[in-house]
Length: 136
Image (cartoon, rainbow, N blue to C red; front, side, top):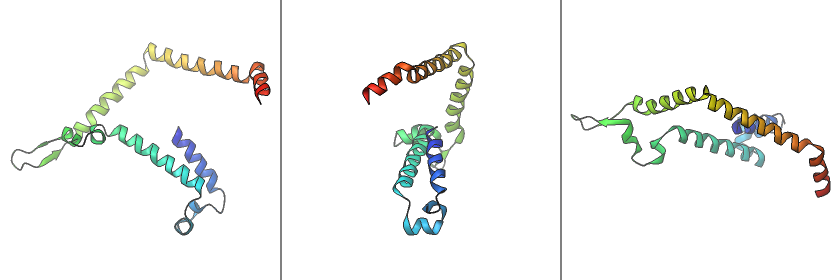
């Protein structure tokens, strides 16, 4: 959701003809504006954080790579096995798929919805307007 927010900001920025992101040449001659740079940096951090969350032990431990393969007894070379990386992710996805269909999770979603609606009503009500006018 955050990524979509920053993407929208960049797309809005690119509607401006002076936006350096519209031209490869302009971008390398002038660089991005401070706002564009900020949005690009925020997107980079979000993407990096997401990829780290998917990489398991690879990004958490310096020897995490050992979990995803085995040493060949003959050549003593490390052999990477993708299934050792993917299997835990598939198990997690399977768990999430099953959890999403439970009554407990449906109830949680309903509570979140009701809480949001309740806050919205409070923030848009006459009392909220009175307090806002009084404070400001």
